[in-house]
Image (cartoon, rainbow, N blue to C red; front, top):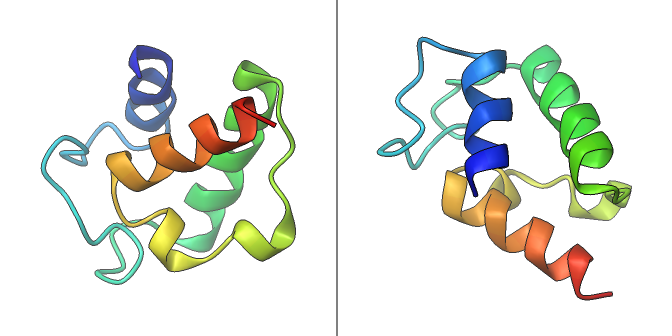
Amino acid sequence: MEQLMKILEEARPDVDFQNEINLIDGEVLDSMDIISIIMEINNVFEIELDPEDLEAKNFNSVGAIWALIQEYQMK
């Protein structure tokens, strides 16, 4: 989780990722933020997210992103 928080905070230091639950739906993150974050997640966690998993529900909160990463790590 620490690595994920570091990725997110580097991408958008102005966002309170601990408490925000509408990162996508609330338009806190834009498409360029998401692309940057996904690239870093793929590199740091050595996974490759599938396009069908790139849904708002998987990126609306830190908890949702972390759950997606854990799911990929178990594959």
